Structures are given as structure tokens and as C-alpha cells.
Image 1 (cartoon, rainbow over the protein chains, first blue to last red):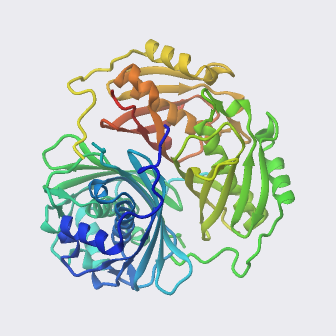
Image 2 (cartoon, one colour):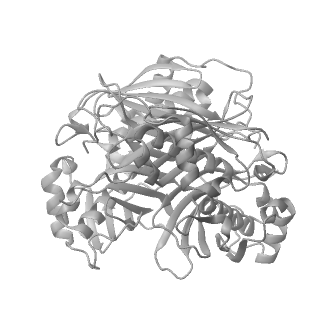
Image 3 (tube, each protein chain N blue to C red):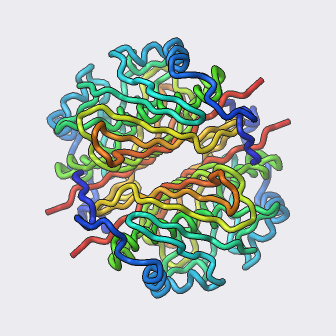
Length: 153
Length: 153
Length: 153
Length: 153
């Protein structure tokens, strides 16, 4: 239960937005099979911001965004923060738990996820995610995700 | 915090599989826009079983099922159990929280969700969901979902 | 799913620290049966900060703080924020869900909970809680709690 | 994400009730500082049943059981199932996440936790817990707990 930071000593993102997107595109090309909806806007040490562009596929009757779309955005944005922070090793991280609270009905607009990794141990990373609708100040959903990290050889 | 059962006195599902599917199809026609992947197999008082047919859209590299697909199946199956149990009023229930644990890598096959409502109060329903891969005995994911129920006039 | 803020129009805490503590003491006198360990330090509109004083009862071998103690602090501090924000009606709120992530081993010292209510609907409040050890910058635990709010007559 | 069972090949509890209690008593003697309230009733391969005896300390005004007491019971009972299943190594397992839903108001009586480990990987164990009040058929609380397992040398 000592949970050293990983990698010790570093305090900057290891990869920039372009490199993170290249790695993910190479590994999961199907993510963009219906168009490039998930756009990495910014990464930092233990942080990321990702935009999900409005798309008819995500829109619910009455003009909202579906729960599974918000789940995808939350899950993906933590993955982005992990890869940016850990480097290429992070690509093998897998979600072990995700807990999401739906707080308000989102508008049929772009959504943005703001992520920070509140734990980055040797074996687990925990990310906190806030989801916002473009142009609206209040949070529409909040999630916490735990990723199992690849073992370093 | 008295949490009476809702509706009091009843102990059977109010609607059968056919009627539940009709209600959901009328309300969310876009669910089946890419084909009818989610099939209600059985409903009972506070229970449901739903199948998600294998579909290339859900398959991850290496041949697994994506997290968002499993989230969708879990969320949808609780909704089915609520509608079957409460009747047409249930159609206005909305997810307020979903917590999912990924336990094992699913095979690229049909998945089945088994749901039971472990709380059915006047205002909240809580469903427990077990997800299985066709033909494999071990649970591949487990979820708990809370729905806010429509207020009865 | 419209979720109006409650009470509409207000943007300040309704009660101050002293009044919140009086209400809770009157309702749950047994909280302090072993001494006054939980101290409300600050309340605001949708926020609270609560301190749990170090107490041999909470200390684990090796000098950490027990999980149940952290659960209690997180749960209590959301309750404080609800009462401060809603006023006396809030005293009847009850926890329906609490999800806690343990991030780092806390020191055997005072702990502080920082709460903000990220949803305050008519029926549900959702609070986000960060727990810190006195004198250490990193978060030691993070929680999300949902409270069912009393129905306004 | 291969998640082999741990230890491979075994299909029985490694330790019996008496041995599990001895190990926990030696490691956490303070658990029983106010009397022996948590009693291990039964253990099996990936399962456990633990009783929490009614105690004035846990009783809330109006005669219910406090949330932190239910948290403790849920958390402890997963720990018991892990130690019974893995053997002495399990004593170093630590809780990383616990999600609890309060379903009904418990009576001021003994409570029982029924646990099954729904995942037992090399690094993580996930336990599902059902809490019941003595003499009442309906579940009063439900929890899911993730433990980080000690690394095998």
C-alpha cells in the first residue's frame, strides 16, 4: 500500500496530443469508424481534456446525449491522460471499474471531458472526470474510473 | 426512508416481453438503427434477461467486446426490468448512477445480462446486473444501476 | 429529468456552522459519544469542510486511519453541506449510495474532507468529497455520495 | 487482461473459520476492542458469511444501524473471503474501492453479510456483498468492494 508515483521523479506529460492520438489510432482504429468524434484537445501531467463532437448517433429523443456516449467519453479521456502521463506503456492499461453519475440533462451539443488522475500507482490509476455540455456552466455528469496498469518488466 | 414497494400489493410483472419491446421501440426507435442487437429474452417481477447479439461494431481488436457496449447492455436491461415491473409509467425512468466492474475479457460472442431489482422504492430503483459471454460460465462484468422513477401523479 | 435547483433562486448557504452543528447534535447526539471528533470548519452554498481529529479509535496498526473512519467522515461531510445549503429540511436527508476510492495510506493525523454538491435536485443530492491528511498535499481518498432528499410538502 | 485465477488449480477454501479469525485477530487486535461484534460464521472457496452482533454503538435514533457500521461489515467480510480463499498471503490485501447502496432501513438487530468473490485475479479481487437484517427477508444494503492483492514474490 505504498503506491509510489509512476514513473518516479517525472512531473511532466511524456507525450503530446499528436503522439497520444497516433498511438490510440494505431491500436484502436475502429474508434473512428463512424468519423472522428473524439478529439484530444489538451494533455498534461496526469490531466487531459477531450471533446466529443455532436453526432446524430449520440442524440436521444428530445435532444439529449445518450448515457453510453457519455460513458465512452469518460472512459476514453482517462485512457488519454494515462498514455500522456506514462508514455507508450500506458496503451496496455485496461478499465477495471467505472462509476458514473448523471447530474443534468445534456444539450444536443459538443461535450467536453476534463480529467485528472487522482491516483497513479504502480498497478492502478484512478481518474476523476467532469463532463460539460458546450456553452453550459454546470456539470452534466461525473465519473470515477480505475484502470489496471501494465506491469513494467 | 420507508421505501414501500411500488406498486404496493403486486407481485407479478405487469407487462410481458412483447409489450415491453413495443413501448421501448416507440420511445427510442434509434436504439435499433444499426439492427436489432438488444433482444429481451425474459421478464418477471423485478427481473429481466436481455441478449446483446455479437456485432462487428462492438468487437475490439483481439476479439473482445467494448466497454461502452457492455455499459449499454447493463443500463438497458435494468430499464427493461423496471418497465416490466412497473408498467407503462416506467418508461420515464432515467439512469442516475451506474457502477460497472469489468471482471474478465469477454469473447467475441453474444452477451447476456441477468438483472434483478434489489430496490424498488417510490422514487428510486436499484438494479444488479450480471453479464455473461455466450457459452462461458464465469461472469465477465458486474454492474449496479440506480434509476430515478417518475413521480406518480 | 429537469432537475431544478432546490431551493430555486437562492445562492447562499442558509445556515452557518454553528446552526448546522446544533441541528446535527440535537438529532444525532450519539455521534459525539466518544468525544467530539468531527468538527465542521466551514460551510458555504453547496460546500463544506469538516475535520476529523486524530483519535486512537481510528488508528490502524502501522499508524494509518481505518477505512470505516474515512467512510464516516465522507458521509458526514456531505450531510453537513446539504443541511447548510437547504436549511433545516435537510436534516431528513438519507444516504442512498456512497462510492469511495482509497488512494494513498493516510498518516495517523487529523483528516479534512472538502465537499461540493455537484447535483442538488428536488429529490437527490450528489456530493463529491476529497479527503486529505493534515500536512500532506496529496489526496488520500475520494468519494461520491448520493443522498435522497426529503420531499417538500 | 488475462486474469488467471489465483492460485491456479485450487477449488477449495485454503483456511477454515478458526484459522481466518486467528490471523485477523493477530493482525488487527483493535477490531475487537469494544467486544467481539464481527463473527465469521462460514467460509468457502470465494465465499464467506459474517455476522455483526447488535450493539448500542451501531444503533441510530429510531432504532436503525448506522451506515459506517454497514460499511465496516461489508468491507470486513470481503477480507475474510479473500483470506479464506488465498491463505495467509491474503492478510496483506487492502481495499481500493467500495461502493455501497443502502436499500432499506435495517432493524436494530444482528446483521449478516453474504459475500462472493466475483473476480479473483493476480492483482485484484472483487467481492459482492449482500447485507441482511436478522429475521427479515429483504436485502438492506448491497456493496461491491475491490481489494488490491499482495504481489506474490
